[in-house]
Amino acid sequence: MFNGFGVALIEDYLMNRLGAVNPRLLIVLRHRVVRSGVWWRIKPLSRALIDSVILYIRRGGVIKSSSLLTQLRQAVIEALAQALSRKLTLVAYLIGLRMMRARGITVESVESIVSLGIMWMNTPNWYKPDITP
Image (tube, rainbow, N blue to C red; front, top):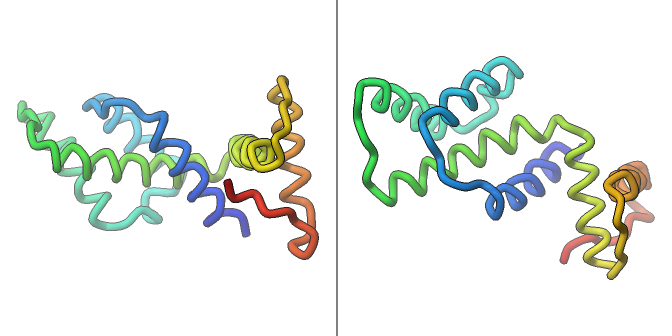
């Protein structure tokens, strides 16, 4: 139920947090998503892009195209979002942060933010407050 919503939250979070994409990140990311069973949920074009860039870099190539790097970054964000959407704590943390921003609440502890997010997820849809910023 929250998988699509969780993926959107994590993609939004990663857009601002993910730095440069390097070859080691691609290799580790691919191994992690294949092991977690999420590899086949990623779009085929993104999977092909990640695989081809890994192969190209292993053979000594260097990517200079800014548009290719942008598309590769989007593919990495998609793969990471699919992998991290299974982490309930992270999704609850991001929902809790959205609730705090929407309501103007300040909480210092991470546990409070996570518990706020879990409470929102456990609330029936009829009573859920809107958390869009």
